[in-house]
Length: 390
Ligand SMILES: [Zn+2]
Image (cartoon, rainbow, N blue to C red; front, side, top):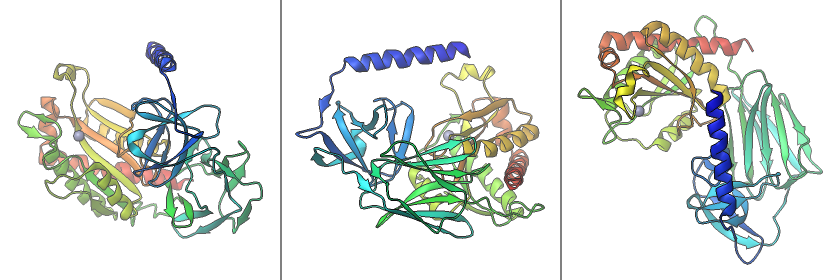
């Protein structure tokens, strides 16, 4: 483990050194370029590299300030101690200006319904924002603002403005567990939405819970192909069994596809958000670049990105291991398009390795698929029970 950290550290060091040598250009005739994100959940990264860690994501149309550029990236100034980076292909330059347009935020206004808290932030520019999950809740930060005379209207829930930097408005939500959060653009600003933990029936914890099931791949996108079996078909068959098992326990289930067709990744996410899903579960089958490695690496694995999804991943993993007897391929942190969403709570499951003949035979067996689906539903049930403790 130590060795891995050392290598990773070395890589970062080498990378930033290499980068320091590269010439950065100004953004134009003035100090800042106002850049606007071209697509939803555009990543802003810690280094000018498309694989670097993501510091924040912004929704389409949101604005950031770039003070330098290289060939592929804008250097973004968030008013923090270090710069961040946004790939040029995801942004349009709106203007070149001498000074940031620091936006005055005079009030924030709370509202709530049964499912969530909504905090309306009136703003003429939709500025960059970030989320940070902390051990006792969530921190939401809005950059390049002046909130000196902030009025807080109809305060609800456990929210507090916490002092950080002068140009950064940070709102802290204290809660022992999180169940989805996001920023939604509004014609007069933005709305921070934080979902409440639902009240559930202990005996039937899935009753009324909305689950979007995503059978990975489809159409021309076949996924893993091994022993004449295509991943997309196995994903769909297992997903349909899971749908049955979840529905039987009272959940409302929607599928991103119910037949063999191609669905773009981000359409799958939009679908889940349109359904106002509580949980998004993607179903896949695994493989390895070198099939010979399957002797050591196989089994069932779950994948999460946001900390809030870890509990769901671990409850699923526990039941799936017990049911399948497969090797434990871990509860893994992974940055995938369908693990990154903060709302709904999102997890991806690799049911097994299709390139492992033994696992392939089981995963394509109808009885096995049914038992697998039942274990899956029990895992989601346990997760809901776990949440209710809070
Ligand atoms: Zn896959």
